[in-house]
Length: 289
Image (cartoon, rainbow, N blue to C red; front, side, top):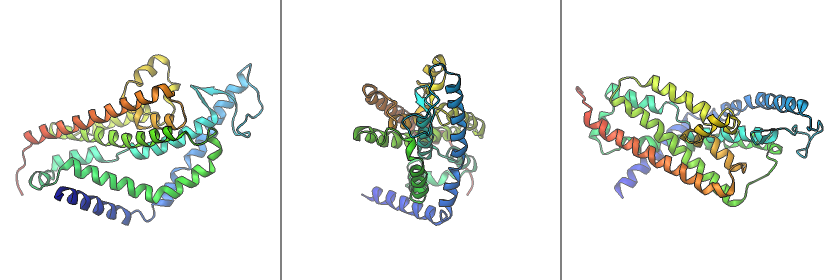
């Protein structure tokens, strides 16, 4: 009971801190959606060019009300592609952990981690609660800009809301993407117990995450040989998978299996992070005040 009260106090304090300096965040969040205008024009040009060169394509607008050409790439039509891009922005808002690994490595390097070794507060649990508070504050302030953008782009969601069980799977996939993103990056930060600098490893991670998570484009656009390999990696669960679930791109008979794989990756990174922390603490030496 004492531990639960302590964690609640930590979460409440972290949430209050973030809400204080998020006063101007709504406008900043809205500005983040401006690049989607460029993306819409870019993808329209791509799909329109495919239609223009296709023998069987019809130049007239389809049933989406004139929003898109008829071509498909990797199982995605133009409207689906715009909807996918919007959904990956939501997924990445859950799974991205800016500064987490670098912050852990810095605390190890500068000796700040000693406070977690002498006080009854678990480092990983503390950082997890502060990230939960960060995400709650983010969405509390960003919900209106998100709602406005999705309302303006509602016609691109041609299939409407998914069935209830798919919507539940989508929400669960977002939660697990948050946990995978947190423990994945925290595990990288734990390398700081062995190496003083993790910035190079973090750069490699961010590079792979940006391209292989599906944040830039659906992973189904990759060549089959490369796509099969990428599908085996955990990165797709950070952005591509939640969006694909919502849009119905994951076959019904494979949804439960894919959700299980995502949960397995989540457990894997939790274990890796915990083991890395436990072993790192054993070899850590701190001197001075």
